[in-house]
Image (cartoon, rainbow, N blue to C red; front, side, top):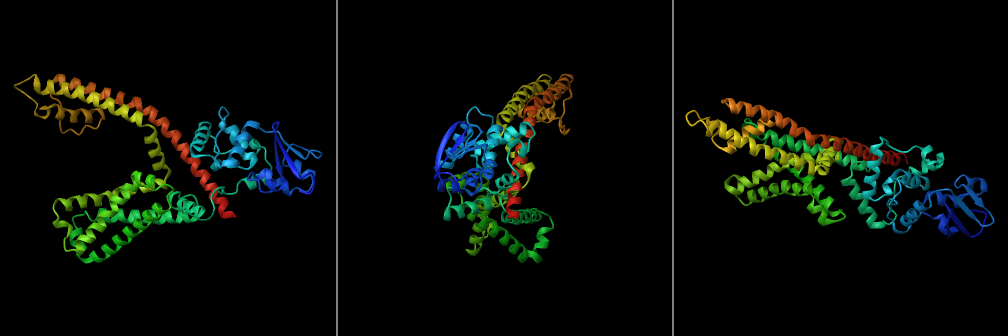
Length: 423
């Protein structure tokens, strides 16, 4: 800046902030920091709405309260929405000053995604924000954490590489390799249960061991590295998928240790059965694919948010099962002592018939033979359709909303990755 005084005044909606030229030069907000590079008043007026040369005051006709929260982000590194202000309006202010949605705290990012999905909006246009083309391009720069430097910055980058597949090209490559190993492991596990496998594995036992060792080695290295770079080790341990990882990996090393000690797993009795059960936990490695596919992410998010509706659905089903199974046992087995239907000898046995009737599956393995039992069966089927349909409506709407949210997040990550590759 080659004009004005050493003290610069920012007037945002009537609220003044005084800074030195050095502070303006290194200011975290791009629109403000670009003022330092301006050589003429014309260039200044491209960034602000008015300029007073005598007072060296830059006027911005923007939301004053929103800028207060943005200044709190500059000082503390935490950005949250202004209470009582529309999320989209605040997001517009953020984009004007050169911030991205990724600067928001996670809870506020979720609120913004919800709001944008409600109106079917993927992103805001430049006309909505009121920024120039140059500013728009600069605002597309990838987000750099302000407070992270040195080792902490490197750990955060490594964490994103392993936990967020869309964060970088390296993360996508690692995610692709992980998916390949998961699929290979699943194919090997399924093939090992085929009747002809015992005959065939005499010839390929060495190849099988090599493939299994490579897969387990990859999963062990991945799990270990993710643990080392995790922000909170305790939160990492408590995650269900991480627990499944450890449970699925451990039996391999236990079996190898027992084999070296001369104690094959098949001869361990109950312990051998437990090891085989734990080895089958590898099937849950398929849940890893949820990090890479929008459909599985949407399903998991929907189930998390709709646990009340799911509980309500289970209550409906169990209450209906209790009522209809008791009536079915009475009509088919309890009233007519001479011609009792053996399939309905007990209420638990009748409960099986109730659940397959309410879900309209109807295996045909048991069915009522009395007139009263058949009338009850028709009522059971109709009531099952109604009871199952009531909560599903809420679950469906939640699924649609979750899908839009996940799609918005994926589009944002893809846009940031594209900008990173272009630089």
